[in-house]
Length: 496
Image (cartoon, rainbow, N blue to C red; front, top):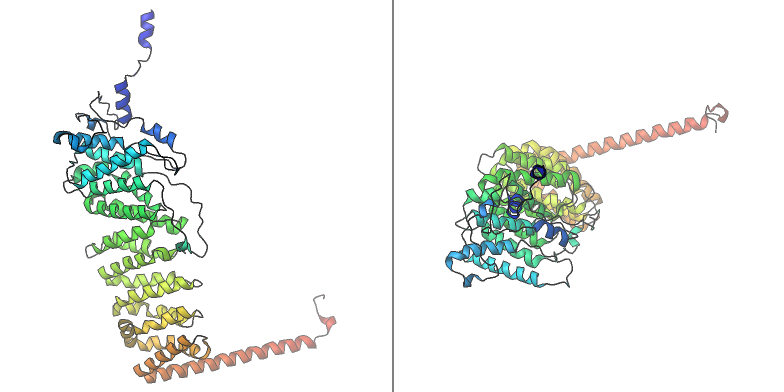
């Protein structure tokens, strides 16, 4: 009877079973009796060491792939082992670096941190010499080490964005653990750009989850980290072509969230810089997916207050699209007019500069579609009381291509801008703007003096009609006041 009861009790798991069950992928429980090199207990050590930033791994790396790898003491140097053992030592050192150091206290140093730093330097040197062989166990160990060290949740942002958008003047915040992070990034870059790397095997571990977590790191406040990420993501896009659609979609989602929800992200400029290079490699004719990225992501990026942080990269991307398909100039200019700033003069200066670059690549056929609303906006800018905006708008006429477009369509454009130039001559306070106005008026007269005279005559007629309407309105009000004074107070229906 006692024997039957004991049989029914649950059997205690063996140590090897525990190791395999914690490291296996989707139910793979192959035992690893001493030959595999594992980073066990990583989750517990991370959660106990870090209080501000939670470090996490983005993917599952099966323990079964480590079976058959000879265990080598990770503290040995690469020069102290044979050529056959170097690969095993490489994996052992990668697993040793899975221990995350806490750099929150700058005064706290330990032998473990120094050992890890030195090990990372050895790994970077080993990969740079071309001695490494990235078979599947090495790729898995590399990706796991990078995931554990890099992928983390950033602490809350206590620095609030000012309403004026003057965040460029703030001092950047540097990560205290950068000395180790930089080595991990160098190692990841060396891995991605390794000449003999098998992309078919690498894509199993540098998967969508890995790339998604990598993109999350672009929100780092450390500009050095964002610069490393920019280079690595570009290399991944070029090396692992199967992931290209996912990268484009993931970046689009980041931009959507930034534009329409948060307006807070530190890495938009770096992401746009990557896409500037990607767009230049698009095949023509452009796919509909690529045009949607322009319409739904790039053009709305002109809306946020912080556009000045990434405007240079944004302009480059937009110009690259128009270079690929000149017919897109129409939709780009309409987008600029839609998001044109009214009260932010510095932002308006950026829009005028971008507009000039776009117009330089605009064909006559596309210009005809948007010239009326465009030059109505330019007329407002010519009359701007902010002298820099007015001056920059006047300088558009120095561009030969824009001047050629205006000359061929002067019958439509002159009546739109001539009243603005006349108002400047009469009322503008800045002498530099007045001089530019006189120069443009002289240029217009040289193009078509009869048309300028017709515009002046039409403007005088409109001013006369406006004066008559003002006088008429004034007389009506005077009659109403006189009639109101004639009525006796007692006859007033409203009690005073």
